Length: 291
Image (cartoon, rainbow, N blue to C red; front, side, top):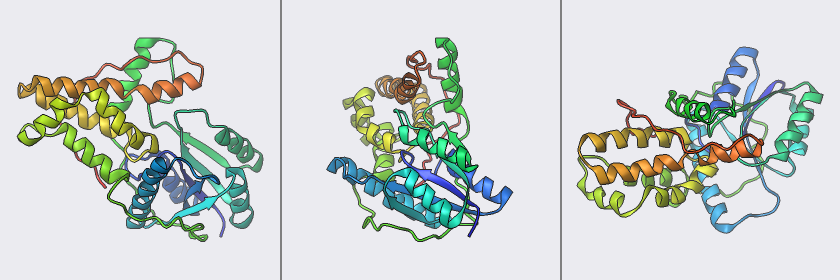
């Protein structure tokens, strides 16, 4: 087998609104070859609570990939070693991955290795626009424009590679954790104008407090920030229109928290930090997050 187009899943454990997955599928369709969905497990176990969320997200990611014709391949070890072996045995044409909001030496080393090996290497933004600016107003406007863009549709994986799925993490589709729980939490917080049972949920918890509950799912990428921003913007507009001022204010406070991960990424790149983005109404957008 030659010509693998690898999508490296890290902190983007979903198939929805996934630019890197779309890019890998497009590259395979354009250039020939197969799409390999890859996750590299850390050699040392992490925090048990975080690992539970991660395993649930991986289990749901695996199911979602299978539904679209793909397979989740799990390896353990240093990323450069994993990619070197895959290239030696099967040949890699391109590598696609999302940026993450903190310093990522593994990605830098992998990019250097890929350049030496003549492998196309592509990174995609997911917490905000890739281009930064020293102008605060421009940065805020760029972030808002990025969030308002249409979400990426989940592609069919018509040429899925199978090079042995690798380590069996005994992934089970648990009720706690993963994209499914994140969507339920978000829906419960945002509610709807016609659902009075959820009024108390929104009024009792500030958006800032809810963001802290949602943040582990955003860090894992079970939901994209853009999915949350569009759903919350739509709900905020609906609550304002219905005169539900307390609920609207609570949702607006959630919106004010969402640029945090992008600011963190910008800070890592030693560019001026962004403040909370301005939030525009998103009329016509619906809360329609897929599993």
